Length: 289
Image (cartoon, rainbow, N blue to C red; front, side, top):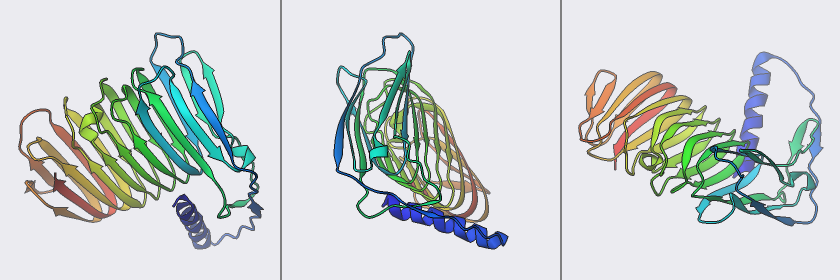
């Protein structure tokens, strides 16, 4: 799947290049594979009273992240058949980074069908974290339910990603930031994320944000996207205010929403969601669950 997104990104680059009337003669680099290797990953919990800053830097491939009750901070495996994909672990004080090895490429990479790069990681649920993920053209599956997240930042390129909070976050999250490109992104259980502020920025893609779960505090959500389809799902009975700003966009409403101009609201009790949506073009769908 990630290879298709990577190809799409290169096609967009090619179209922009032609539109600008500029010619580039970029060499094509063959990415050579070797024997498949599997590295065991085990990162101890740093000896500090500070919140741990955990960074995951991942390029192309498949990334899986899950919660776990364990004695270490991160455990898991990395399976790859390109030697330069070997993961590197760096730790200093409260700072921990797991990153993909450097692959030097001159020109456009030719990823063959046999390329393999898979991370399967488990993160300690008992340790308060600021989690930062930077990824490229990849397929990602995040189960973050139960993790003690104080801040969460995910940045990726052309991707196919599912993020789920199946259980409440025991910590109060200050901000959840997600910045993506031409992607297919599904965020579920956002009520359980327990954030104060959420900022989602997308390019041309399909994005689904479902705010099911236990919403404990008032939250403000900012959504910006280009040519895209954005679906917002809020459970019935959650007081919600959605303000929409769009160019060549349409809004489709399904469920208990009341419209007043470019504002859509739903009555309820408890913590309130305030959502601001800015779209270049496309379709916004408002739904109940």
